[in-house]
Length: 324
Image (cartoon, rainbow, N blue to C red; front, side):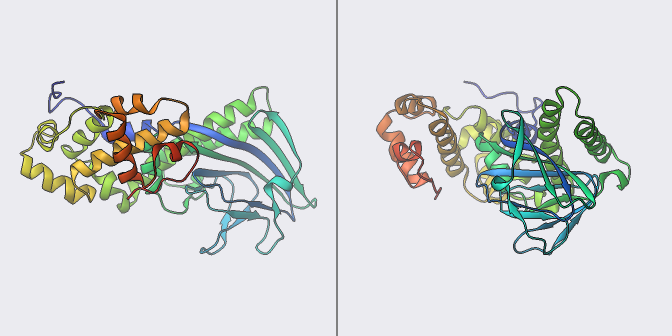
């Protein structure tokens, strides 16, 4: 396959964001009255999102000071760390799955708790991501992302967008119109992407490493092409051609930005794609080998174990892969 025109339009970062296709663990609307407390367990490989639609509450999470959340605050816990939400610091928190709930839909719940005092409304969700680019992106996020009172932030396109979406979520949670749970779950998913976009634009940490490489005009182009065509018989020279750079300049620039050689990145990317396929279903390992550019199942299996630390069969049956 020929390399694309070196200056054809491409948006590697946009493609990574597009990979944030979510599968929901749960969504819920909570109606609390003080005193109340909710303990959310750790949910590995999940991202949790909380939107305060009315009243206020406190977040408590190990390693951080208690954080006050007020109306139209939005809090993201990207790595599924266990935490509590309480009416006041020190309030006893009931484990999430010990609370009675009403099921409006298969993955949408309504939780009510409290002693009759001041009211707090929350919309919460926990979502998972299947695409390897999504896993890589989520792994780079901080432990907490807090957007404080989006209604009072300075005007701007992105802040205004989040503000309007939060208002819509709050209205749906308040009015309980037919189909409200569907609207809320869809908007929660969109909010996740918008918050990550905002973090990428504002946090200096997002301008270096893998994310910085995606935003580099030439290296980002090569990474995007690797993601699209993992089975291609890539060489350092062919990657450099996609980036419209010399072989030596490309190798040095890729290593500088990404933190590993380009051919190592290619091998890890192929194995991350394979890991996703293994967890998704019963695709034959021989088919995976062919689709990822390996000449035999044995060659693929050796590469998988070298990169991921376990055999493909073990990964399929739920053992944790640990990339080397």
